[in-house]
Length: 141
Image (cartoon, rainbow, N blue to C red):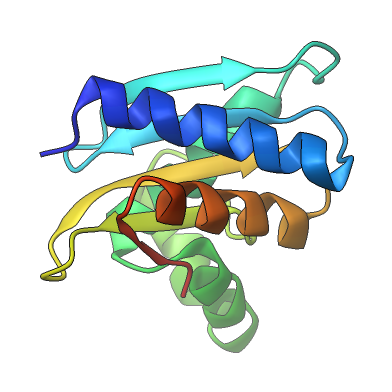
């Protein structure tokens, strides 16, 4: 189970990493294993849709059990599959890096982090760093 306090700590760690890297303003969404929003935050200056993009990265990772980088790679290899899954998901899947599964030490999926606002690789790096900061295991795919 992903606790609210841990979700908030992940957000704080992600935003601290973004500041350290001097990234553009980010939106961060943390979902629990059911796909419910546990916590979210958007820095001043993020564009209107960034939170929805961050949610879509995390939602896709949870929905397919793969980090969104793996979904991105699969979309290039099997575009019809990812398109079909996105249709099933009501168009809410965002298949680009920045959605990272949160796992316990024993491999249980506890939730996912989605980040949007800078280059996708930077978004993903902040998510991975934030998950590690709370002593959990990231799975970016």
